[in-house]
Image 1 (cartoon, rainbow, N blue to C red):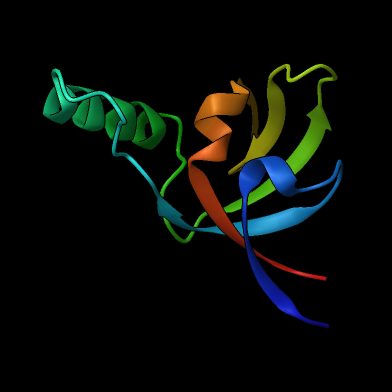
Image 2: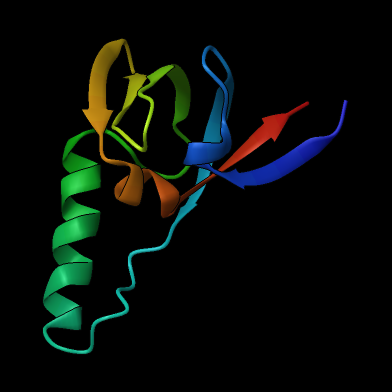
Length: 91
């Protein structure tokens, strides 16, 4: 098996990974610091922090949200948010 680092959006349904980093930076210059903090804080509040194991339960078609299992709870996040979460996965 090979260990890969991928955005969360690249995991298949039922696949598990460990969060290794979160890209909290924004491409917008205005209020970038505020958005970075808000984004990171929101993920932390949902339990999505580096080192956390996540399982993709279901990925909605047509770039819809991704349903995750995190720390025994299920939650859904938008694809744009999931794209900024880097996970380590073995394939």
